[in-house]
Image (cartoon, chains in turn blue, green):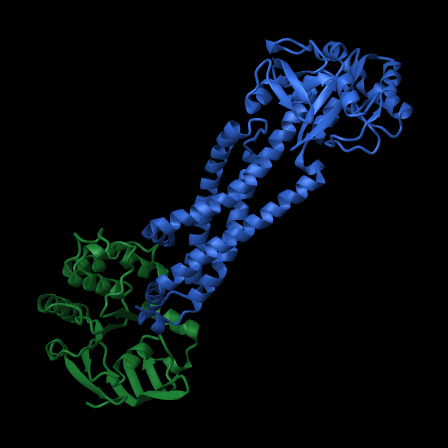
Length: 361
Length: 221
């Protein structure tokens, strides 16, 4: 019976209910989109790391897993190559060009030997020193074709468009990039191919002994680090967004329920005249808030699909994952915010004097 | 059934004490149908609110079925409203979002009787009230007379000891007024329902067994 009253009350003011649900939906979308983009982008990086075909990755000392900066001497590559079971090793130079974008300098022959080579969709591999390869996603995002010019501090000519999924989105010859950015004989990352992946642990141990301060990961370890939990800044940012979402949910439901309580003063008086206890009245208001939060969360989940569709059109280089494992959390956050928001109006209704309420017009 | 002695009620409005009841006395036997008449401000509504457990008296004594209302806590008075008294208001006071049937059912739900099997006697009462074909309609689709009959059904669904009707025909035309008053009289005759009705209308008061006059917070006759 209460449930019917709750649903009918919400249906009675369809515009307010819809607006409240959308507002709650926005907070849910904020959370799910942030988590989805974080996971999508990190997943992309992980997939591209796997796409290189390498078994082991080496980063400079004091570097972090996602930092573009931080380089090491190219001579380290030779040290790595000398290790038993290492069949190929190549260094790459990652140069940030702002807005979380980067160009990766590669030794094309060495890199092809590890990865099996790029699949060229349009154009050719490097023909000249100012040539740049871009993957299909970057080409779509920047509307690039073979022969297009890319101006990122210096002007590059697109020589080819390659299939996405290997290492990076934009590639140049490493020597040219080292010269241009005064990073002569420096590399940011070393990709190592072994005779068999079964030797990964043994080589990792040997490399860690030989290069004690360096960050050395198996590809699987590296992929495992590509999560929100391993990136403190992202984790903190997510917590801030969740906090904001809670506040928004609280305010939306507070405003909605407060208005509802004022509007329904007489109805509250009727319920009290019929013998409804303060708990009964509070129960109705809290249930309304929970239903509103659940409907809002469902709207928010649907809106994340819309956000993903928009991102595919406007920011194709950023992948947004759909994160069903976060849906229960998003619902919980919406419900908690809504319950807090409904508490004061609910208590106000529960304490309402029945005679005054019945006299209310 | 109801015994009221020297009942007083003082409201505080701002810094002024308003003496709404100044020593009212009244005795009502089980099965009586009483009309309470009197000018505005005579204390009729306050007496109803106290009888209905909506507000406590200031002093005096008031017993319903042997239960002392003065000694009751707020929670006990709330409990009493579930089954001991039923209200019918001038403005019907139905919940606008619920159908007529749900407006009646919610009174059963509040009283904790929603899981009990349907009451055959109540089905008969619904027929008596002429509501059987109108129960799926929301209040906005019902006439004033129909809404008031739904309110009466809601008030008696839990078989209260007393039915308190505050100007039940105040918003109705003559035809609907007579229908509602006829129904109340029928409930009194057939079920022995004790009814106290406030009214300004002498014709409405004539439906009662006894007319009680109130003036200046006291019962006159």
